[in-house]
Amino acid sequence: LHVLSLGYSYDDVGLLSTIAGVGIALGNIPAGMLTTVCGPRFVLLVHCVLFTSSAALSCAASRVEAHLALPFFVASFLLLGTAESVGLLAGNTFMGSTAHSSLRGRAGSTQGGIVRCAASVGPLVGGMIAQAIGPIAVYALQVILAMLCAIAIRVLMPLTSATQDISTSGAMPRRADSPHGGSLSMADVVREHWRLLLSASTFVGLASYLRKSRELIFPLEGHERGLSQAEVGRYASLSFLVDFALFPVAGILMDRLGRTRTGALSFVLTMLSFLILQRNSPETFAMFAILGGIANGIQSGLTATFGADLA
Image 1 (cartoon, rainbow, N blue to C red):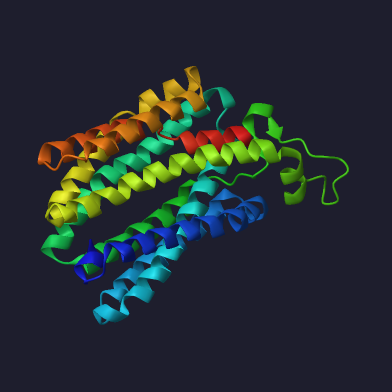
Image 2: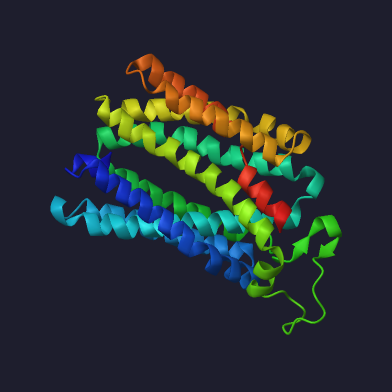
């Protein structure tokens, strides 16, 4: 909404969303290597630094001429996507090393539920602050929260190894013929498990695509319908509140029905919520928010659990 308010088009918003996706893609492999070497706690601290830098760049974009702001937003969204990728991978690694496989569905859904709890409050508070004070105040609040998160990680999070697995009562087995202490190289992993990696990546990629599409629809569709920032924030908060309420159900579904069936049900409900938007009325936007929240809520922690299972 801030980008649109500066006079940029929907194409520019789409470009920024794509740039964030590029950041996610570029961050995955380096984040995996860094997690293996330094552990998930260090990588989560890197995530906080990247997120803070992204918010600072968006804040800087608000203080320059409107026609000069786009490069700042491009850099901000690139760092934001990288931060998301780094944080997700480190969080998944930490969960996989500390939660038993029989409980990972519920552990992953709880992790996702906490994220959704914040997401249900964020749009509401952010929309009110942006409307009352301005977007710079929202970015400043993001910087402060990221710093507090970094302090909490440093103080409260225990040190763990990327190869630790509580399900096997210790470190993961390593190959005896590998040159670096028996650890598998990236090429070994791809060569031996490319079919599994391809199918899993397609599944997780589709889940991420639908989730990001839903998040992007709120500001774009809200702007198209003439809603204020606070009104868009209320609809988004309603959706994420429904999302948050279902995270215990998601854990049970994943552990009992399986990850794939739970994800497929979520995909169907998400696409139905998109179809509802064909009618232009406040009721349909509210129905989209609620059904989209249900769809995303039942796959709470799905990506984290899926990744922990594969690891």
